[in-house]
Image 1: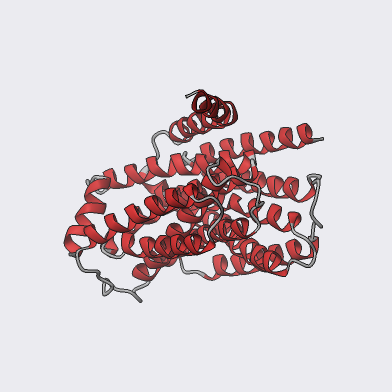
Image 2 (image 1 turned 90 degrees about the vertical axis):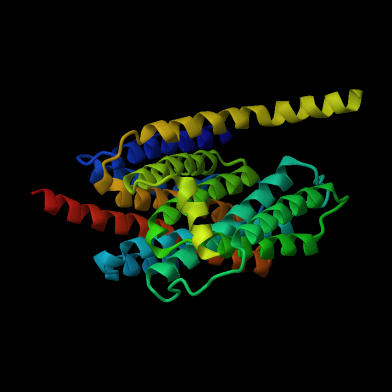
Length: 276
Length: 107
């Protein structure tokens, strides 16, 4: 039965690839979007009905979440003005990142006590928590900058130094967490707080005009976060779907920079320079 | 020394297949979009953003694995599904609207 499920997941991955490929060409973009949406629907249905060894299924909670989320998503997509599209995409992207973050938190809470800390499972969990949080707060800041409510007022002193120190603290703290004899939730929450802050510190110094590039980069992060969450469950459609978005997102980000006659480093570092 | 070698061998046996998949899928993701015309940058970003909502599957598995009285997990999973579904449904719908506009412009 597990083989059947994995085969069905593989089929939906293939459809995702065709959808993404279609999206990149003017004549097929609309169809590509619908194909990708179909692949998503199929992958969700498979994950809902795949047989599982333990757990109570709790279908009402799943159905409730899906209905509430779909209705909100559909209404906001219909209502948003055409000129407000990029900030809407940023907000959506942040919510996806928040989901990866929530999964990271809860899976730490539910971590099997016999799991060794120095393991792929703990690493994947830390990874999903970090990338999801950065993508969440980073996208919210980008959204705020685009709709004018943040208007570049949020400036940190010496942003390059703060960014580097925060990133080093997160990497060191993650390594430290994995070297402990058992799970220390205080460390996990400290890493969560640092990651949330890093998202803010990363995007804040970058000017509003460069936000589309930043959103594309954060979008790529969310894809990589989905891969991290997929590694927790060993779920192929999450792992591959996420990394497809992660990789194509990076390339798209570079292309967007080129269209503006800038380099990606220039956008990130240059933004940092002007912010300090 | 022996235990170290054993640890590395076990690690590779467990993770080499997944690392292989990750590397190949990254190349696929980079190659697949090829040369995108500038007008398609935003719709492609938006469509890819909707696909990254695939993380909703993690929240679904999280809830399915939970005990029926584990309200903390259920509540967090519920919130996760809501947020990710806004990303998925909103993302695909917004992309569709953008591409609709694009089609009209071309006529």
